[in-house]
Figure 1: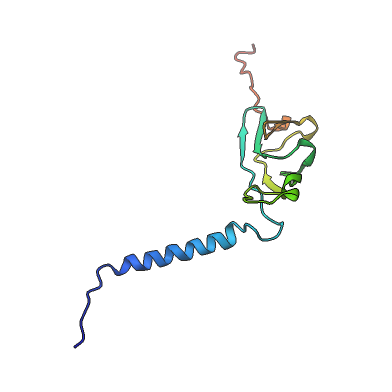
Figure 2 (figure 1 turned 90 degrees about the vertical axis):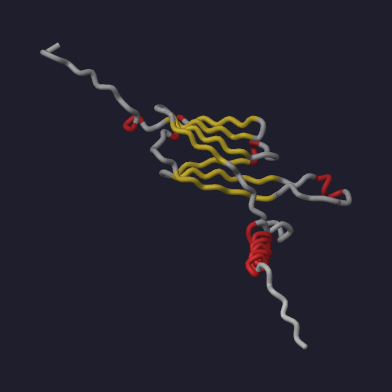
Length: 150
């Protein structure tokens, strides 16, 4: 005799399969840890616009200022460099290696024209701060209103 078993929640099993597939793709393609040396280094960034300047703050931990290059071409800002691997990792037996090493690059489009010849850069505590003065033509200008010839 065949016994019928009622399937309580068929959607629960489908959701768990979908979650498993999402994790598989995320771990394989988004975070390719251990796949050679071409691991992408994430560079979180803030871009703030004031009346006079664009201020860009990029977080680049574990990098020396001399290993970073900043260029501006037209409306594109490029920050690139390299985080070099510690010598201790090459000498000893590694039990855990989560920090990322290698070359990095990030390009962002600037929301306004800037004066590159007056740009300033400061690197402190793993944060690169760029101060880019806006183009003089784009800065807001106040126009005094004259009445009755005055």
